Length: 43
Image 1: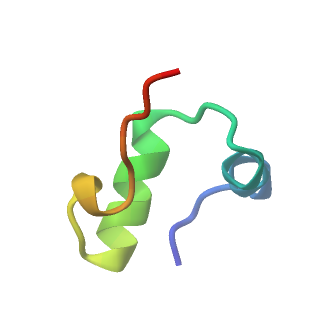
Image 2 (image 1 turned 120 degrees about the vertical axis):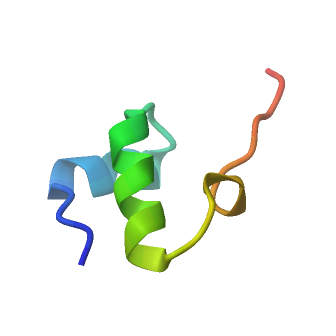
């Protein structure tokens, strides 16, 4: 549905960094805003 690779999905599952392009593709597929799928957490 998103057209993102399985490697990117694996990175998401591990909590690794991904590009904003991947986040945009997810938002387009879900018809949502980026603030609905991510949050910034202080380390």
